[in-house]
Image (tube, rainbow, N blue to C red; front, top):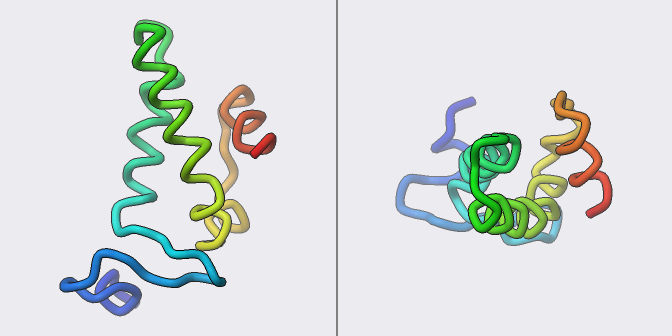
Length: 83
């Protein structure tokens, strides 16, 4: 299966298990996880990344991401688990 089989190139949103998920949600989560986990990142950047991570968790759960992949970073796994 290819990405465009899941969400066509001309669509920016899809419905997954009753949740509207925007294209790019997984990539944004990964980018935010890198910032949030980076000890050299400033507090404002980490706070923004955390807010965006928490906001994405319902979409990522609807996609089934955490049924297939484990978050290896203990602190990030705990953050995701709380939401």
